Image (cartoon, rainbow, N blue to C red):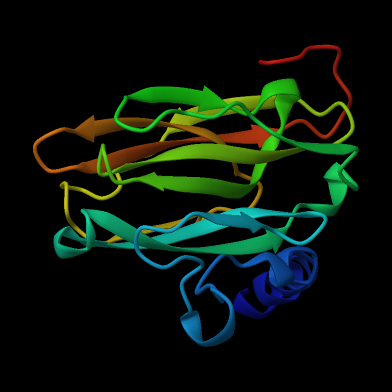
Length: 199
């Protein structure tokens, strides 16, 4: 009986591994020697290579460096079922020192970040770099837990599940700690074209 089950399930496991084996999310390569994309108190611009999206975000906080953070990102190719990006753009700027909520417009996925540090506020303004894949629409969206768990802590957010994508974020800003907590908006995407925008 065990041999029969093995013969039935082994081909299924082999096919599933072949389809999804290249898309195991984690551990991530954050670039050469795990270097940061910024230095303290400086602006930065990070974009994933064409056809890839953000799947991991790492950050460390330093109060002595203007209550600023170092940032690093990891990218992975979007699922083949989404095809190639049809357009990419920079979203509106989210101002420093404020709480905000933003998703990529036109059903886009986050493929990069741009940020500028403001010493007068001891905070950063943020912009998402978004890419749209044909006319795919998001569904089964949810908010992650807060990253970092407490103000001033290191942050390491990873997408552990294939076929879920970051579409945006909501952040809170502590005027006392001069730091942000992030909740990322994560969604699945349809495998068919749909007529809706900004879902």
